[in-house]
Length: 237
Image 1 (tube, helix red, strand yellow):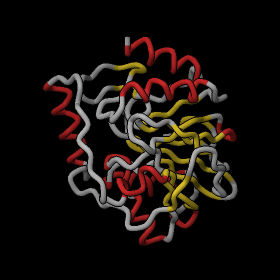
Image 2 (image 1 turned 180 degrees about the horizontal axis):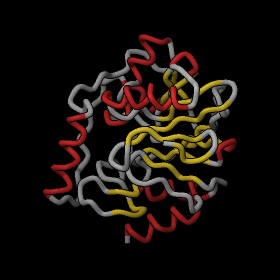
Image 3 (image 1 turned 120 degrees about the vertical axis):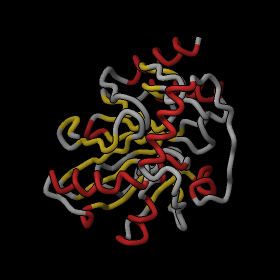
């Protein structure tokens, strides 16, 4: 799905991953679920690219519904996968956490679990090797993505700021569709390790200059970083 020139989404409002397509190659931000592999290949073909054009994957954090096809790209196509050092063990499956669910409703929760299962969510393949990144790093990848630490959802939760496409990819630092309640619009994400810290991190997001704010769950937001941060804080209250 084309969002804007050079900016594409695969998946849907339940679970999404993103592509930045520029002349020197393709950047993948998050890897959704393993079943999104076909959509990855199809979206690349639609813009005249192949898997050989993918230069790197950056994960916004190490949770399973963002790992998806990352190890397959790394193992079979030699694509490096980058994740914040604080989430590296989580992405390798060495560290498991059980954050509280918070609010949930039976029907939306069941729909999310079934949706995820049908797209390979029960067959997570953890990474066997990752490139660790840190807050402030500018990566030598298509679009020159900059790592912005947004701890809270997980210790290594980050935003990936790509000015060339006027976008910041936020993973689960916020959501625009709560997968457990069905509520839509900007709000705190479920399964968050430290909710108060996640809200504090919104100050860093608001300070970025980007029109597109792209979450791992929910509709893309094109109203800017400051506005979405305000909306999330209001929802939290």
